[in-house]
Amino acid sequence: QVQLVESGGGLVQAGGSLRLSCAASRIIFSKNVMGWYRQAPGNQRELVAHITTTGLTNYADSVKGRFTISRDNAKNTVYLQMNSLKPEDTAVYYCNLVPAFLSWGQGTQVTVSS
Image (cartoon, rainbow, N blue to C red):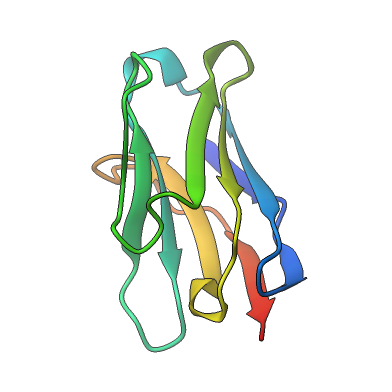
């Protein structure tokens, strides 16, 4: 069974940084577009960044210039470096394929205080 395990979240002040990691079991990262999603209370889950198998990236306008997605296919891990965090970035962050075909993991909570 494929599992997605997100980590690296926490509480940070506005302007701070966090680095999220997502490790997967039994998934061939090298053959799939990977993405980071987030869901804030009362909101739908949204895709904030994704990375292709060749390393091409794309970002939601709300995070462009502040977040950087990367992947390590040898480690089956995708990362999200988040800089200049804002309170509106507060959410549970998840990784998944793009489109999100896999079952969701538990996510990692990111809380940004003002």
